[in-house]
Image 1 (cartoon, rainbow, N blue to C red):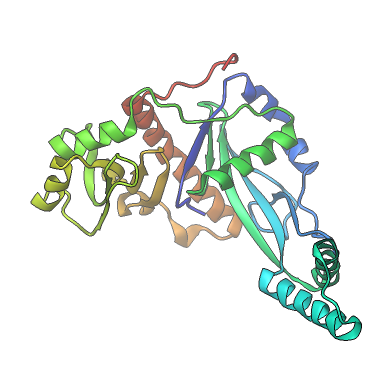
Image 2 (cartoon, rainbow, N blue to C red; image 1 turned 120 degrees about the vertical axis):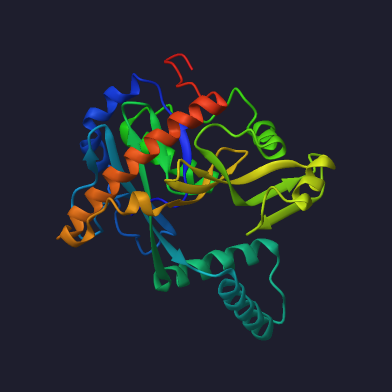
Length: 305
């Protein structure tokens, strides 16, 4: 269950108190089955799998949760094809083509007929809360998906003022300087991936993978005025990732020095494995987040923010 992408939010210290009843609050928003006339339902599921009842797993100040959803698959092509058949039948039987209002009504009828028979696609999204340092971490690179997870927690506990990152230092400017001059912070080294863009609207975009980022080719793009929008990095020989100018951490991968700490042979159950992975991951990410806070200026919001 090691996260692959990190979209980060911060919440004030006072919010940690409202997390004391989190287990009860999550239970009030437990995922239910998608009804025959519903397109989607969302709610919380167990981090251990849908067959389990518990809706959170806690290790110290860290609480792992999972947001689940059930979505009915009803392709627009199927709806349009069925609607076209109904319209053709009316034209053949009555010698007329339905107008706009009637077509709208017919489409609603088609959806009502097809929806109960549509397949259901389940999904699950993992996230965790750090009550000590005020981080809410979502395993997704999509801002919309992550904000939906924030909304789901907010709906459960009533008030959850988690806000996106508001860096005091421009990530784009800082990462461009790192790549241009090679003056990275201690413990940080360049990876082999970068996305460079001309900051002008509709400007050129250059994406490099498996590339020496100190090569003349990359430097020429920087000299022409392109800026770093995503940069591959390795931190402290313990993890690699691609950091975006939106401070979303993508393609997170823990390196062998970290993974070797997991004694998988002695993990006798799913619960033990999840517990070990979660404890290790949160410990490593705590160090990374402290550095992000230092490099970019990411103060924890106060109660008035």
